[in-house]
Amino acid sequence: MSTYRRACGYTLIEALIALLILAIGLLGIAGLYVSSLRGDALSRDLEFVSRVALEELDMLNASSYASLASDSKRVTHRGSKYNVVWTVTDKTPGPDTKQIVMQVGWPTDDPASCLDPAQVTTCANLQTYVSYVAKKPGE
Image (cartoon, rainbow, N blue to C red; front, side, top):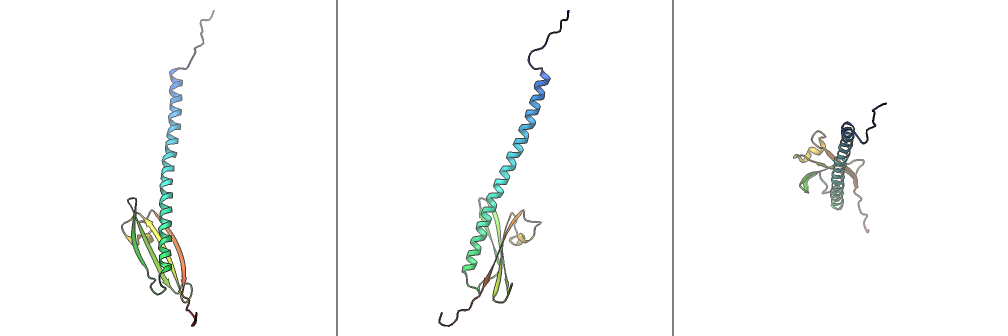
């Protein structure tokens, strides 16, 4: 007669292996959560940068044709500093036309560093063209 008796329940080794698998799965989920938080922050920054660039382009388009000139400024939002650099090029693509290239980047201390990819983590670029149209007499 055999004295073999079937054990009921789990052994300690099985329980530890199950806990190990659970821990690995939870670490993977935590990594995804951190990545989603970073993506959300980047999305907010890009939305703000786009809004700043469009506002600056609107102000430049509203100014007189003769007064358009390259310049830069710094904008602070939620503790972050953003560099706003715009470049105005005359006679591009033709006569009586100016090209405006707006660049907004962060985080650096040099306002012109938006042009240097080694110093900027992210940079948004927008461009537009402004033409001078002379009014005819009587208009």
